[in-house]
Structures are given as C-alpha cells and as structure tokens.
Image 1 (cartoon, rainbow, N blue to C red):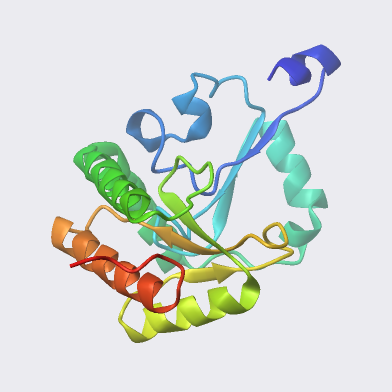
Image 2 (image 1 turned 30 degrees about the horizontal axis):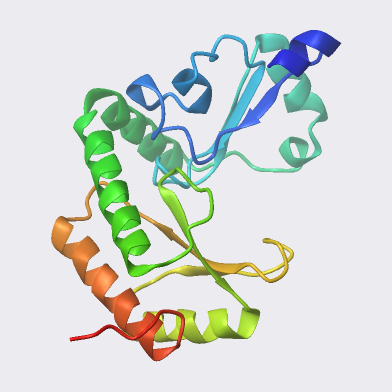
Length: 205
C-alpha cells in the first residue's frame, strides 16, 4: 500500500484463498488488515470457499466496464451457469451469517499445524489454512504422496517450478467440517507414512 501511494499506482489483490476465510464476515485479506477501501481491484475465485465454479472482480464501475470490453479472458469466455452463480450466492450468505464455521476452521488449522510440527515436519512460513509439508526431493515427494493416498489421505503434490527447486511439498488444507477425529486420523496416517519413507525418524514405543 505504501508503494501504491508513493508511485500513484493501482493495487490489484488476488485473494483467491482469503475471501471467506480472513477478515470480518470473511471479507478477505484486505479487510483483515483494515485496508479493504484502499485496494483498487480485488479478484477471487468461486472454486474455494464458495464451493462453486467461476470467479469475480470487485472494483469501481469504470474498471469493471474496461475489463468487460478489453479483458481477453473475459471477451472470449462464456458466463458461468446460473446454478454456479446461485451456489456462490448461497455460500456467500452462509459465510456472512455463520461465523462459527470460520472459527471452527481456524481451530482445525491450529490442531493440524501443531500436530505436524510436533511430528517434526517442516511447514515453512505458512500461516493460513493452506498448510505445506516440505519434503524436498521430487521423487521422495512422489513416494510419500502415493503412500498417503493409498492409506486414505489426499494431498496435493507441488514440484518446481511451482515451488523452489529442492523444496517439493505436499499441499494440505483444513475445512470447517473436519472433526478432531478426522485430523487426528490424518496425523496418524502421515506419521506412519513419514516413518516408513524415512521422512520422519522412527518413533519409539
């Protein structure tokens, strides 16, 4: 924001993972930091917190008009289906009216993160509901990912260039409807696979 003001620029925020999770009523990262009115353009997706498809751009009317008529991806795309728009609107109402879901989400994130740290995993500097587990080498990541999948735990593998070379990772995330039992079961699975693959030291007892 300081750079924007210094150079008279516009600030565009891609808040795909923030909307629905951060800020009052899930309004996103800018709201979380009290800067919602100072961000010029906020873009996001309906495929995360809104559990639908498509996306959105929030900005002044003049900016929206320009995007509609000049944005290549907009000009050559069809509108989202009414069912998808309806699902996103319904999700928005739930996000606004049921803050207990976000509260539960963050309790789950804390339980998951603390459990992984206690096992000895490297989580990098993440502080959101998206929790990376850094494995390192690509082939070791592939083995760990497959064994977790076979054991009933779904994760997303990420390798270079999506991440730095040598820092291949498993991307994990919590949701509000996970129970403590779900998280504890996932921690037990990842602990067992981690030991068998040599990612973690063998537990005693």
